[in-house]
Length: 149
Image: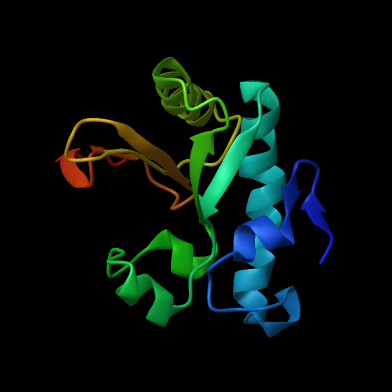
């Protein structure tokens, strides 16, 4: 499995997904992953200008249920990534979340969701970003504020 796009590989997007190769994906999901890697995830990584680790990309329905994902998870559609700055520096998580907000607001990446997830102890876990088509924002896994645009 090679690169899906600059700075994003199929292996990253499919790790832990329940699918072994891109050829095992439904055609619509594969098209979503390819489009979003080009239109959303690659520009985000390029603008962040520091390494990002994909901890979750595509998920089958079964994997999504097993990990406690949302019933209508964008991961199952091939439209979401959960990202961790390689530095693991708290300010880089904030910077990544802010960048998602700015790029979506400016129309530089597709509109979508952005979630900030922390552990029970308040330590950063990851930043979720997706291309659901409407703006949605939440923190620590619960919806604090939902905006639809």
